[in-house]
Length: 345
Image (cartoon, rainbow, N blue to C red; front, side, top):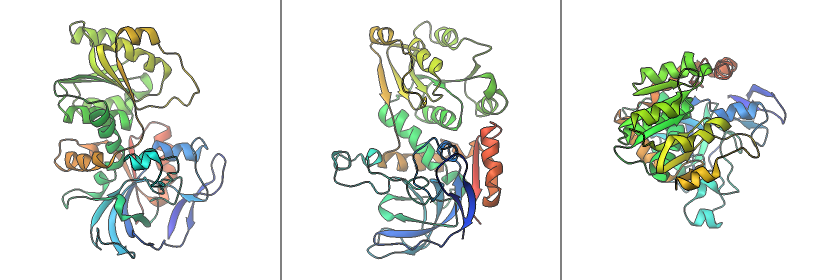
C-alpha cells in the first residue's frame, strides 16, 4: 500500500512509499482509512521541528471503518465506523496514566510521529482508543473530530466556559476557528475572532462566513478597545490564545476582565517570552495551559459535530488524493488552505 513516510531525520525527507499493510495484534483492530487530515504537527515534522521516530507514516487525524479484528478484541466489529484517540503506547502505570491522564504520559507515542499513522490505506489501532461515529456523519467531517476534541477539552472541560460568556479567540487558524465554534456551541453570548493581515484572505474570511459576531484584523482595529467597548469597559470572560505570537499572548491580560480566564492552546516555539505578570496578578486571572485531549472530549465532540451544533466540516477547504500530498502541504504553508483532507483511496 502507498503511504506518506517521513524517511529520516532532517528537513524534508517526506515521500510516498510502498509499505506492507499492518497486522493487528492483541487488543487491536485494522482500520481502512477513509479520510486523513493534515495537521500543523505534520508540517512541523516535515521541517524537523517536532519529535518523531523515522521511518514513520504521518497522519493522526483520521476516520475509517474496521476491516479486521485482532485477538483479544470484542469492543468493535468489522464494519464499525470509527475515529481514534492518538494516545498509543502510554505506559499505563505512571502516575499520569493511573490518574486518567494517558494523553500526557511521557512514554506516549502517537500515530503520525511516534508510530505509523493514517496517511495510508490501513492503520492498526488499540480498540480501547476508538470511538464509533454515527452513520450520518461523513468521513471527512469525522476526520476533524481529533482537532475539535482538543478545543472541546481545552475550552469546555478545562477553561470551564459557561453559557453567556464573552469570548475572544486570538489566532484564526483551524484550531482558533474550532475554538470559536466550540465556544459558540457551549453558549457563548459573543465570540470575537482576532487575526493579522496575513489571515485576511482565507482565515478571517472564513470566520465571517461562519457567522462570528466580531472579526478583527489587528492592522485595522485595536482588539482591546473593541472588546472593552463591547463589554461596557469590563473585558472578556475568556480569552483563548491560539496564535502562539508573543504580542498576542501578552495582550490576553488586557482583553479579559478581573477574575477572567486565559485558555492557552498555541505554542510559541521559544524558550521564554515577555508576559505582564503583575498585571495578571492584579486581575486575579486564571491561566489554563492545555495539551491533547481527554476520553470524554471525544464523545462530546462527536455529538456536537453529528448534531450540527459545531460545523467543523466547514473548515475543510481542500480534499485531495494521497498522491497530491505535496500540494496540500504547500497550500497550508502558504495559508491558502484551512484544513486539507487526504483520501488514501
